[in-house]
Image (cartoon, rainbow, N blue to C red):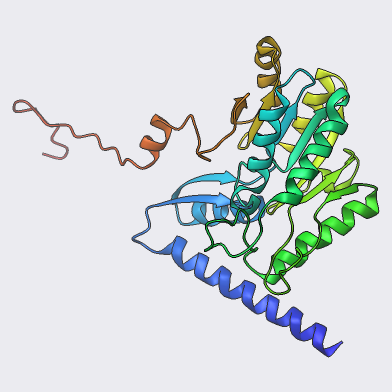
Length: 288
């Protein structure tokens, strides 16, 4: 009991220290604008703080970026894209494809191929050029992800790959690339934000069901990926998914917002209107 209380006190103290640093940065007079990318709860708090100090702010909230794989897709490329999206940068990026939606006729094949490839991903020292997946940033993050794996299994998901410490790595915050299959939309694990080397696979039957599932895990600030040979389908379903960016038969290898353009330029530009009289201009003389 005493140990648990000490751990809770230490966690609360660390959180207060982090908040103090954040507040100092936001309130600093030399900070004119704030750009945030991260989890929703922190982003909402920073928005409130920015408004208090009248600071301009742009925010990109992290979320789930679904990858929809239809039966008529090029499965070789779709599998490559799904794996890259899920495990590049250890799955710790806003556009990570932590949710895979696969159409029923190819669902078993997709799960099998994802699991086989995930088991072969080289996990190890990030300084080693042969390494494809390094450790998580700290033990708390590692424990959180393994707890989510256990939760998914309790809810009825099937562990197809990973979910444990990789063989040969007894130390460090390593988690083997994880694939949870048979994830249903009613499960808590389905819509949770995942920031790590773990993907969930859910089957669907119709286009309408695919859009419904994708919409349940995405929001207007995230990305989505759609694999199909029917481009008319892509044109119809894209707007219904409602993500900020949609990659059709392509992966997001650069992890950048495509349609930034003038929006980003305007945010980091301070405009000023200057009015210069071309000649003597009469000025009303109050109280003359």
